[in-house]
Structures are given as C-alpha cells and as structure tokens.
Image 1: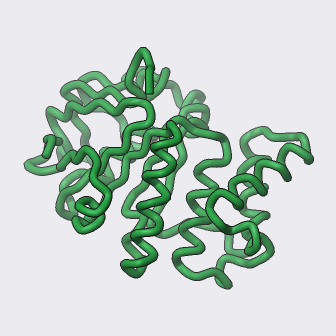
Image 2 (image 1 turned 60 degrees about the vertical axis):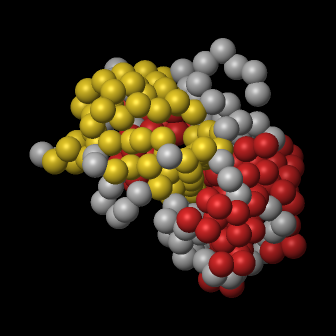
Length: 224
C-alpha cells in the first residue's frame, strides 16, 4: 500500500520496566497494510514493546513514532487520541461481562465520541457482520465460546477503523482450529490495508500464514 511514512517507526529504542531494561537498541518499521509477527520467549520484551506502542510504557531513549505521534514527547492528554487510532486485541478479551456483544461495541463508540444513533447502529452491525457474529449480537460474553469472544474483541478493535491493530497472543487461549481462523482473519484485515502486529508463541501459525517475523531476544528486536 502506498504511503509516505511507516505507521510504526522505532530507531534504537530502549524500554525500562522499573529499574530493569526490558528492551534496548530496538529498531523496527511497520508499513501500512503490513502483517508482522512478534515472537520470543516469555519475558523477552514482546508485551513491553506492544505496551510502548500504545504509550503505556514510556520510551527511555531512542526515537519512536507511531502514526503522527512522537512517543518521546507525547503528552498525557494526547494518549487517548493515539489509542483511538490503534485497535488492541488482548488475549484475555477484557469484555464487559454485564453487557451483550452489541452493547460492548456500542459502549466503545459512545466512549470515543460517537453521537449519531443511526451511525452507531450501522457501524456495530458492520463490524459484527465482518467477524461473522451478527447473529450473536444479543448474547452475553459468558454465552459465547472462546473463539466467538475473540472475534468480538477483534470487532471491537476495528470499530474506529484504526490504521494499526496490535494483537497480543490473540490465539493463546483458543483451540488450534479456532486459532487458525482468528489468524486467517487478521491476515485478511492486513490485506485490506490495516497494519497488524501480532505477538505469538504459535510457530505453526507463522508457518501456515507466512509474513515478516520480528524476534525479541537478548533484550532487543531482530529480523528472522
């Protein structure tokens, strides 16, 4: 996809968790519509890297840009606007347990400034249809399978049409067949123009659905 600049551009970045160095000399670029796997052992810095992209962990040194935001100088007041442009898919779903699938999505749109009821209804139906969940819109999260909950989380991440999706072990709690369908869908999202960064331990998915691979090891990020 043509673009003047990467959606993520890290140059010689260092990240710290308390007094410990989580990553150092990390350099990576992600282009619009690109699918990138992030692999590495537990504790290798994958989650720290993802958290830094949505400004939960500050940049200790180096240069880091995400979309039009300079993470070295970003103000607290700007962080919600950065995150509105990032779709975040968590392994543990983080759905609102007291609301239906549809209400979970409506909540996000209302919280991010949508006011028009017709537009809200249309967008919720659009993303539910896209992940094959339109017929489950009335169900509570506990009534959905793990795969259905993860599809709902992906729908939630897509609501505001973000240019970047960050997926942290999105298939980690799913059976192999369901995990494959989630990975396949995330690749389809990238093919449609949304950059996807997916952290995973599942090397069979990496082999089955090839894409660029970045590895966190020795406290830095290397290309496989």
